[in-house]
Image (cartoon, rainbow, N blue to C red; front, side, top):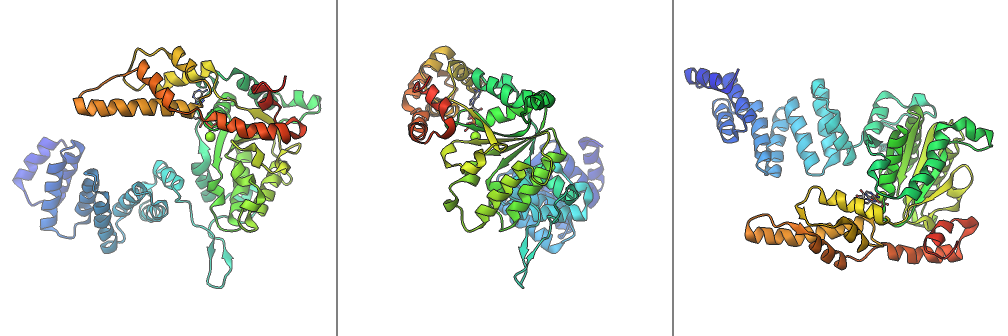
Length: 458
Ligand SMILES: Nc1ncnc2c1ncn2[C@@H]1O[C@H](COP(=O)(O)OP(=O)(O)O)[C@@H](O)[C@H]1O
Ligand SMILES: [Mg+2]
């Protein structure tokens, strides 16, 4: 029924609660929020404990930007009517918005247990990614570690439906990025083709020469220069499932749980082969062992190495990609044959790449008379992230002007060149550190590419 006929019906019986709720909902759909609120208030004047009206009002209050008040109101509903699924799901959304993943998860689970139709992968994924993973290993009062969720089993059977789905939501990334979305970097792309794509596509050919397909590839280089982007693009090129693991997602856990989770992640990747398991900022895991608190660090490293070696399971079709800005912090155990035994140096973006990055950044901004080539020339030594900073600087000062004038003031190429002078290229510092390691700790030619890039070796 449309709003007009509902209003007509309401005129005939103004105190009809079900009808009032329908009218209010129709107002919401039309974004007539004040009218919707008035209708819900009317419901409450007739039926003070009406949970539908109370939940919807909380929602409207959140839309006005008063989220913490909305939380208080919806919490009142969950206390008065603990079986109201709509209240729990709204509470979950609000808690997620407030950055409270764990509470959001509890509310979400409660809502779904009351009303299964409220299941929502999209929402759950967001909750999990903000820390609302499933139940954790809990310490019971007698001091026993008590597994509530991850089943202890070495094999794939250990991936029970619930845990597998959770891991998937947390780590599986859809990549529609491909090499064409990465500007320039032709040498790196060629490196990736030779070291990753061809071996995965022609494993038999590689075997014939005594080489193994699979294993690990380590990308290293200065920060902000496209390692993460290239990893995704690689997965896109080979059309493999892509699992991206930030190590804090594994490290911030109770003792024993991290190893378990890591194992499950590898199991999931094996199940989904061909797949790419991407460990970003892997130095966090493999950092100087002294940095890691207690013994959890070492057992986790050993677990990781065992998974890499495929000691207990077959890693065929699983490519492990690591990325790091600080390869010198990596434990040498990681670099042994069969582990991260192929290295790819990702240098700062070249002229073509910088032009591409400039183009990407100017796409959604009011930029005029910009000579991309000229700006790229002025940003030699800049990382992708530095170029982002150049745009941020220029945007900020223009925005200030726009506020004063009350209209859009375009960003010009000149503004950007000016902003570029204020940003310090961050890659130089990286090369200073790298140079020391490359010159004095260049075991088995680990840093040859860096030296070559710096013109110190041919
Ligand atoms: N060659 C490139 N083409 C397009 N964008 C790039 C390129 N290199 C870097 N970027 C952009 O710069 C930013 C930093 O890249 P990122 O992959 O996160 O760097 P890293 O992982 O090496 O620290 C990203 O927003 C990325 O989109
Ligand atoms: Mg990165």
